[in-house]
Length: 263
Image (cartoon, rainbow, N blue to C red):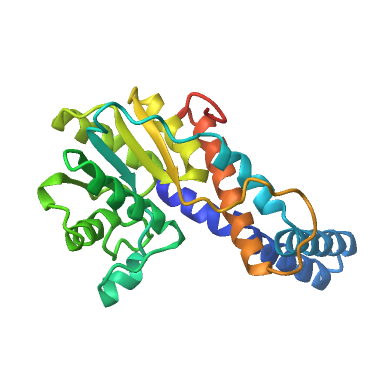
């Protein structure tokens, strides 16, 4: 139930959806002659759109998330296992067309492949089922098996976790698989902005993992200002930042992470 509530909440709470909702409220308030509400909702919608489209606010909000965890020092002899969290494949497109079409987070699997080739003794645990509301698509763990095999990684090195639909389920289901396979002190690969929430969840479960962030979206030097050159990119950064900060807050309030902003 929590999964579906979070999906529905995010449909409304993401910046462009919120701006649209405010515009609808403004129109309805106008039809009902509620002048004050109409004006307030219209101004709020315009402000959300302006900040999202034409400022660097998204990058500024995302940057501290990406800077929170540096890559860990590799253990002597290399890692015994590599955990990769899903989200790197275009599941709907791959299910329809085949192949390995990647999202912007595809670096998670490129880095997994690189490490898998550098450390051939390491087991690879990919955690990722179908996170859509329909449940009709292949998950990242299934696609990753074909992807890694295509580049010469034997299937017997891979442990597939195919049931998780969100980060909380990633961590909970991974805990069980690590225990059953006798694995510990693994590298954790996910997007840099996603690493604080992921590390918080794994720590709450008592799992000792080594952060290995990838898929950086900011330069690390962003400052607050106007940017009229790339509204679509600004929107993506803002949406990602708001989603991640909201997730951190929700998981902390729900007791799923030991700190609001793990470090």
